[in-house]
Image (cartoon, rainbow, N blue to C red; front, top):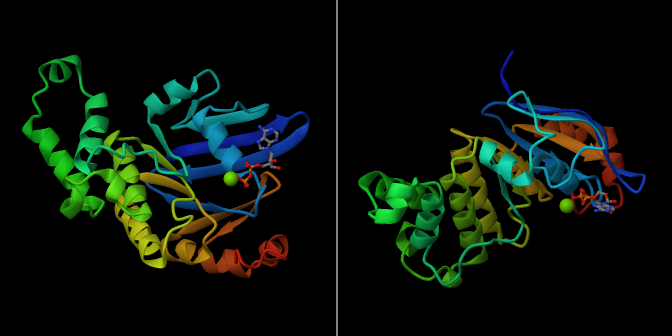
Length: 249
Ligand code: ADP
Ligand code: MG
């Protein structure tokens, strides 16, 4: 049996009696790239909120590498190694991509390197490598404000990776992107998946087809079904919950 990076056991999240997450049982392996889909209101964002500690389970447990997260604050959970990318990019627009990555890197540095400010060779290498990974080497030194929406998304994914999280949570990374930018973000996530555990929430089915290995379908706060892209796409229950929303499938 593979080691689990993330498990939820019978998790329910109630808002004034309404169950946004309802007895959810979910698990993913270390090193897995998992895509979670589901119609609007299925509980996808709440699912990420309960993993990151923004909301606590009303019932049930969330385990990260086997550890119950209940007693940890949102900040502590981030420090344990769960990084979250929100839907809209949060990069510093007046700084360059290189500076954005350096700042993120420095946050993790010890007091000495921060005090003396000397950017050592290792750090330069890791920023250089990250710029290559996210495909922004040629735009490394222009203000981030001049990047396209897709390039900003890739930069923010790079900033997330710079914090070396063990689990990356990525919420709808291609909403509003052109087809070409969507493809580039997909290729980036596939490259990162070689060395990271990644959970992606997404609506765009072409994108899901591009990156998916195992897909989990959420519906009314519970797992409706799981499988590879074809299995999920052809599952009558999935077709039914997406009925009337066929633009999503
Ligand atoms: P999704 O991201 O899949 O569209 P959400 O997790 O945002 O779904 O929401 C799931 C359900 O829970 C929705 O019906 C939403 O209205 C409800 N919900 C989410 N957050 C709250 C909250 N803080 N208070 C009350 N209801 C909420
Ligand atoms: Mg949502």
